[in-house]
Each structure stands twice: as structure tokens, then as C-alpha cells.
Length: 282
Image 1 (tube, rainbow, N blue to C red):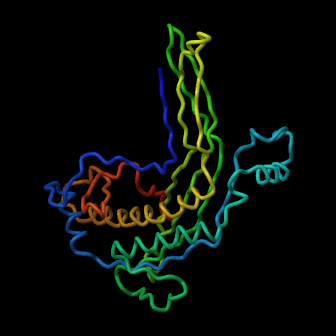
Image 2 (tube, rainbow, N blue to C red):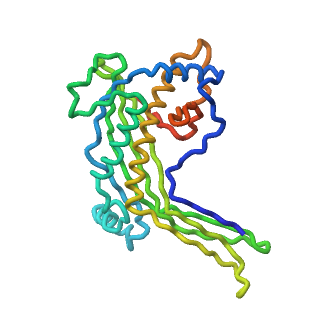
Image 3 (cartoon, rainbow, N blue to C red):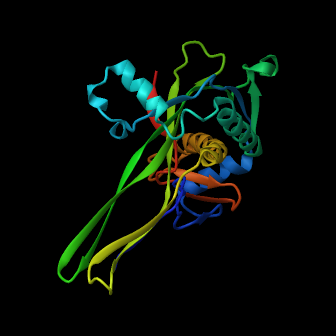
């Protein structure tokens, strides 16, 4: 028998091979120097004004392909399970409050537009971070399960509700003429909680499938915004950390990994996929 359990997740990684700040690897030594120096980074943060929200569940709308684009948009909005009910203000408040709080814990001097006059752009480590877009997409995730019974393979497909939470950031040096902007991106997914398995029904002799779904709720999307605010603050710290490592490695050495600083454990670990994707510069 085959048993699968899918929980509501934010793609939390399992970090392997924790490395202490006293590790002897060259990258670790340089990273340790950055962390211990507690370099002050001044950051002017410009939050987004709205959240872009899209429903991609066209398959649940009868005759969807025959509708005009405007009608498709209206139908998708009206049949959405989440996006039509989500409040932009709550999402942004949850996200931004935790983003800024975690940045300050990590040592950033954070300024918002309301106190922009206090932001000293002339300091060498001064940057502007524009949150160019926050986007939420809902869709159906097709889960496929299978099991072998008596030399036969049985399949079951179940559609789970899924929500992607994506953010784009534009980062640039402050008060520098013709400075280049680095575009950073991150996305995370949450699913319905699911548990299912195949079993041999002793009364009928047939192979059946039993499952239960604990559906993703609106409050879970708001919790996701809270969680990712803290997570993305860590991603930004890691971006500066890895920039420092690359610049300060001994001559002739190149970085072999991208690193994450675990603030609570005071360790440096491999980031794996838990990091900003650098989309380029402009």
C-alpha cells in the first residue's frame, strides 16, 4: 500500500550539514567577518501600492474556452476561491511589518517614505529597495498517486487548491548617478492539506482509494504573507552576505555555494533553493 501526506507548506527547507561560524572554509571565514563586523546597511524601502491577484482555474468554468477574454477574466474572478476575498491592505500590512521588523533585527537601518528626509543617501552603504510587485496566483495542483496490487498498478488523481505568493524587488545604490538596478525575485507555494492511500477492501475484494482534504483557507494566505515577510528579509541579508563573500575571497578563489545565515542558530548553511533569484540588472 502507498500512503501520501501533503500538508500546508511554505516550502520550508531542511538544511543539511550545518556549518558553524568558526568553520575553516574560506567562504565561511569571510562570511563570519561580515557577520561579526555588523556592517550597517541603510535601506530606504518603498512598499507596493497594491497586490496583483489572478485566478488560473479556467478548467472549472463551463465553456471557458469559448468566452471572450473580458468574460474569461470576469468568470475567473467570480469563481475564485481566494483572490476575490483577499484584502490587499491586510496582505501588505502582514508582509511589510514582518519584513521591516526582521530587517532591523538583522542590523539594517530601515527607512520608509514617510521618514525619507532622515535617510542619508550619502553614506557608502545606502540603498533603495523598491518592491515593484507582489502577486498572488491561485490554481489547481494535480496530485497523482499510484500503488501496486497483485501485479497491477492503480492510479488516482486529486486536484488540490494551491496559492503562489511572488515578489519582485528592485535594489539600487542610493544617490549614485547612473547606478544599475538589481532585480530580485522570490516565490513560495501553499497547498491544501491532503492525506490519502490505496487499500484492499476485504468485503468487496476491490482496490479502493481513501483520502481527506483540509482545504487551504483565507487566513492561511494571510499567515503566508506574515511568514514570507520574515523569510524575504533573511533573503535580502543573504544577498548582501554573498556579495561580500564574492568580493572578499582570497585571490584566485571562487564561491562554490550560495550561503544563508541562520540568525537564531548563529550558523551559516547552504541556501539551496531558499534564496532570491537574481533576474538581472537594468
